[in-house]
Length: 165
Image 1 (cartoon, helix red, strand yellow):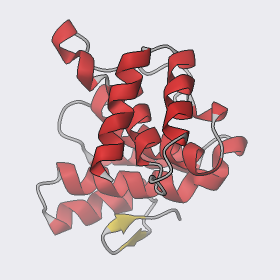
Image 2 (cartoon, one colour):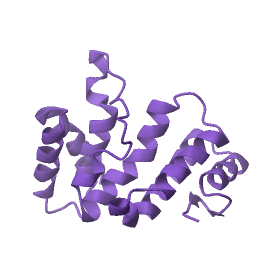
Image 3 (cartoon, helix red, strand yellow):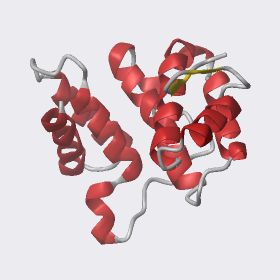
């Protein structure tokens, strides 16, 4: 899965960082037969939002637009799931670059809970992504991870990952 994910980053960087370029990179990823988890598309979405391959050019990621769910409306199925799954990581990194607090996790949970109607079926993946954020930002402290997940899911936290209420 790592190679396909990295390829997604590279394809997006090659095509560019505009919405049309993202669609082109995701289409190129679709041609991979050996990518059942759509890791290539996930890498393209991650690169689109974080812009890791442009860091030497002074960018720190794509600014969060007024509609925080953009560009995920344009994608469906597993590809849409990959797009929505990247959002909480990006929101946290761009909007809340300091140490995340329970208020930050509450905000993230609110955004996942209130996904627009056309993205509602990706809600579980959105919450799982918050769980990943909790694990990677709370220094493997189980109590802080649980506290973060509870804040994100309005009190409902399942073992090892955040879940929707």
